[in-house]
Image (cartoon, rainbow, N blue to C red):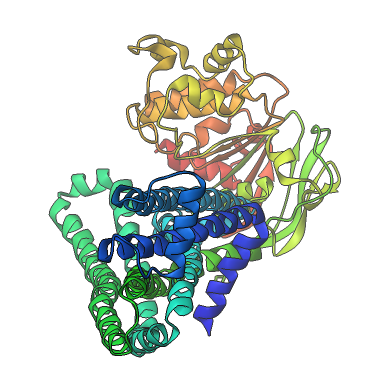
Length: 591
């Protein structure tokens, strides 16, 4: 029942969104059908002429063709009938190519639409959707399973075409010799019944195929992401074998799946041919004219591959259904985690951002944030400090709207953050994470990604503020140097400064620096500190830090522990108060 529902869902999605393609395909199939009928009928006069060139007792169809030849003054010869037959076969082949092209064009247009819609649904979801999803499942769905879904749509369109073709091929022999045709169809149907029972097995293979691909691609993604660790630990062979074991499991299921589809087609053709032979033997005893028998046999033999293909396609569709079901499952999960889309457009930051008694926890876990209240004032530097796991980065995610509080409120200029359109607010924010990720492109392209309209002078001004001009000038291609995957061709400090320049280029209303120096060496840390100190006066900065050297100029400091604010105040005051937590933290880091 689930399989039938999925097939209907795919067909509805195709028919509802792309009616023009459906109409075009149907029109082409009708034309192809007319030509196919003509091709079948064209063999009758050719056969009559071969058996008796004087045409002393021709069939009615031969007489009709002869009348046409006489009307256009074409001589009644072997070559005339032969070319008449071959000509319709050639025209039929041309239209088969046209129909196939139309199916491919339709398939990839629909596939593009599905990809566009799916990515739209995914990127309307909250960060929780991406952070909580199986990466292998996501990558496999977007990379491999969507192509399988495209193939499925092609199979469905092809199956629709084949049903029409089959009806056309059968209509002619039914008209010429109904008894022979019905006998052949009955025998073919009896032979086809066992193959129809394979649908459930095919679906199970398809599901296993999808699940093993998820696992294999997930492991491969982990290997590529953790290549440095794998090399550093000397665990290349172990990692390779782990992936190959998962890949072998996938291969095993895939081979079974593909063999089943081919086996159905291969075994049915000789069985169907046997049905035609039996029907032909019965009709010969009834003294049916040879020319008409030839047309009937030609038509039935032409229909057999279609029946075989229909059975194979049916197996393939049931095999591919799990891919569609996985896509729908991910879409539904993304929709359930859809961001709250406010109605108000954020224009500019006027006063402050206030978190009031905010609580937050990830699903099935204890609270990470426990009743936090903080204020980020416009034009000031606000620092969140504390040990790892104290909730600092989670608060940054809450301020960005990437996570939603369980209880409490986040206000921007006295208006709830949930009332704003999320992107209208985020486009006014510059964000630099602890692990800065750059695109596999040039430094220039990485900068322009955040602000496409930036001028050359603005690029260099942002690089200058981020203390990046000197090292860029020493690179072979300067600002047009390719940085490698995730920026791997640059040092950690260089990547961090490019990421800071990228954030500054958009002239943010709020700049969030999330542990921007925690993973850097002392020299790189000092350069980033200088960059922060040189930022324009009056820029609103939220700085999250574990190491305290970067927050010396903070107007307001909040110290967190276990998701609670345990101390707050001005850095200059707290740093000299021997009873303060900040003072004790500074002493520890100096040691």
